[in-house]
Amino acid sequence: AQSVTQPDIHITVSEGASLELRCNYSYGATPYLFWYVQSPGQGLQLLLKYFSGDTLVQGIKGFEAEFKRSQSSFNLRKPSVHWSDAAEYFCAVGAISGGYNKLIFGAGTRLAVHP
Amino acid sequence: DGGITQSPKYLFRKEGQNVTLSCEQNLNHDAMYWYRQDPGQGLRLIYYSQIVNDFQKGDIAEGYSVSREKKESFPLTVTSAQKNPTAFYLCASSIDPGAVAKNIQYFGAGTRLSVL
Image (cartoon, chains in turn blue, green):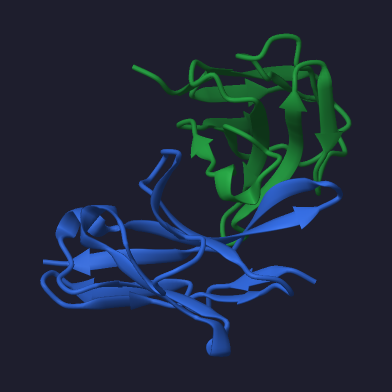
């Protein structure tokens, strides 16, 4: 079955520190992978996506993610975190199910940033 | 400004009452979606629509209904049959549901529904 696992429910980092949020997926075919960010009480905003090609993808707000097929992972990284990055982050895989394309989301990782 | 507008931002439901959440988009997208978000569970798909006058059940459709009479609009009704409606509801849209690579979904700001 298709699924997305985000092992870390909460992560706390200091401002200026580096960040890595983990994402593992289970999908039989070539995955289409996404990272979204959600500020409190708001909708989701797309940070970046991977469809094919270069396995290191750049996104908005200084984020990047690396696709590793051998590890079924698509981890999100940022070299230096800002206080405004505090939010909830969702990894998702695009899948075909029942004749339509759907997004399967992980449970999310809530990021707190200490000053 | 193109985008997805959800209203109201907060909604309260009494026992036995049906309530309707509004979702309007001006992105000219064909596909629209409704998700339910509960703490620690990510997003779960309630209903989706690939085209006007057509919609399909998602993973948790019981207790919900939708209509798609216009391309721009995809209202969700939470019926009295939904026994645990308290959640954050998100509407999304995408250009073309027929191709995964084009299924980048854009989200509204959400409606928080609570039971009185």
